[in-house]
Image (cartoon, rainbow, N blue to C red; front, side, top):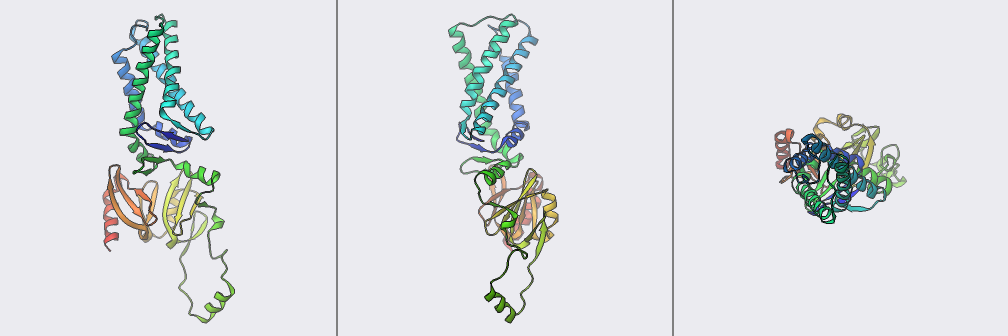
Length: 314
């Protein structure tokens, strides 16, 4: 799913990512607030039947129809693997919800509309819905993305949902690799020349290997762990990433305490991966040696900042 907002922001993710975002308190509050505003302004008084209860029910049902239709347009675009502009889904939603509202009003004893009335109604609904989109895209999207654990490219205003990485691995064969692609002591055999040289040289210091979510990994190769629904993305020093089934807490428990720190409910960072501590509009973030930026949870901000500053100054 690839959604483009009026202010240039982009959302990339799956249906689960969109569902989590829509249940966020800011999005729910925006819908409720706009519903109350319409009921208070009463812009449809000339066509709706008398009675505040009936009018409130008609407005509420029309907003539900608008929301369901708009979501349906987004889902259809996702299934066809096409980008969709928010204005496209809004236009479809406004058209269907307007027809619904007028028909329900007439059935409840309201007045019919002529051509001029239809034009005025559709224009008002489009403007009202567009204002809501602007508020969402400009003032709420960053906070929703942070709270729902999305990756944020602040410079390009791109918000990437957790399941987007799963889709990339399945559909495009991106930099996510199966566990068998990663070298371990069991599946890596040294060349014969190296074996002979090793026999004549002092024994090397054993590497630290740990079982992390069922996969044996060298702990010093791990830069970053990130929760991805029922999986954990393990980012390695060589640029590869593993997607292992399990919980982030179990992955962290398998690693030495001194190796790194959990900085967010969805992120663990290795001490050796730290390169910078950043303060941005969307909050404090850590920059890693691979260029990625990881958000710091608000309730862990002081602890993580002290830890990061101590490591960076060492």
